[in-house]
Image (cartoon, rainbow, N blue to C red; front, side):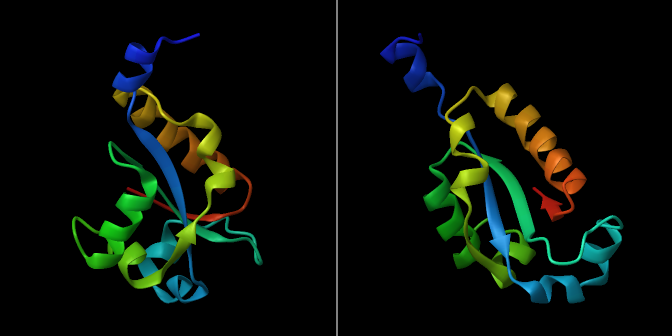
Length: 113
């Protein structure tokens, strides 16, 4: 079990944000998701050194924002990521990619940070 000191150094997070259905109108998003399954959610997958709630607020405010999240972000989906957090930086970088791949394979429409 990690000690308090070790755990405090692990402050990176992966996060998943639900995007509204209008994101499908963006040709670039559609091209990135050729295997999207009708009816599945659209999501953005990212990683951050901040609390995911703070990072979501920054996206919505246009601060270091992904345009799809700024314009179409609905809410965080912690059921898809909370079990992984917090983690070291390198683990978060890897998990962001792995989580995006897994969600795409499940039929989600995914954009990654």
